[in-house]
Image 1 (cartoon, rainbow, N blue to C red):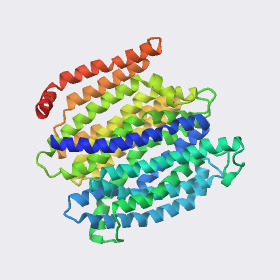
Image 2: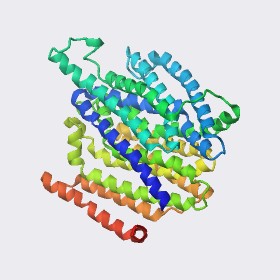
Image 3: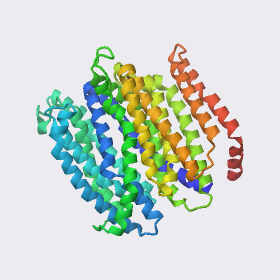
Length: 499
């Protein structure tokens, strides 16, 4: 129980910083939907899907490899850090330069002719992210969640500040004659450009702070360390590519597969903006998954040699599912007022029905992260590739078959179905190679029940905002009662522990 408390405590710290930071960052959706066109939102959605995909290539699984070789291979963690960071800097220079040079071709391929600068800035953003990855990982390994959280928050505050300055404040100051048109090269016709520039400035400015807090490194490339880490991480690279395909490809391909005027009066790029904006509303579940991952990855590796670790992993999974299913219902039943609050244009609200599906997709992603511990601690990362490849195939099939016919529904289903397939495969193979006594029956029940309640609450309409607020949130009561009934033995144990 003390191990679970430690994990919960660190998850709370990571979660607080992530939720606070991302909540502030989340407010940007108000800024974007208020000040930018739906076409700019579509550009934002597709370009950042590309960023997510390329980010995996730039880091190629080295974060997980760093944790594995720093905790379970009897190596000096500082020595592993020096080698890992040195290797990433070298590869980042190569990949970043290549992408920078290919920017003109990429702008044409993605239908942004004459805007090669967008992809040059993207190359710089990706390069900054890559050389920050291992220092951030070292802060987690060194059990410095507060320093980690501080750095993340600083980065987010700067990003939000630059966004507000460039998208809202400068245009107002120009309109009121406070600053002249073209001040510092400012262009009023830019939209997604300022989102990228804000990200670029914020990432560049945070580098010195993170490197300082993580500790100086010595440039080293030792074959006896680099070679096994490379062998370990390459399967994770392919897992990451397939995984990000599952997570981001629907957003990237949506505008290219959806016919114009599929949704009346909107181009495919504008519809992609609506699709991407509603993805943002599912961010709370993603925040929980991300916060849990920050704390759980080093925790899982540190406990891998304990004889009771399978039981511990099962308890962690069960607690994760209980919390996330309750959160999923709570968000879904309140979308009737949360949606209009953050999506400042009625056109975006047409996609609100997607959000419960997207929440379930992110929840399944978190479950997959829990399940995937078996191939990470048994050094059988090759299975990760095949599992995530299967998910990627499902994603592509669903997107290509359903998006042209069903639009938003097809894109949302691709998220759920790919992670569901990955979870099933990971569970089956995991029980064969590294059995973990998961409470599978209860866990599946919570998932199905939460999904049903989420849509029951979403479609419920009692006629007035007050009645809807009471009635919809009242659906949390049966969920809580069933939870208390099914978990009564666990609650008794917790009560004895705390009394």
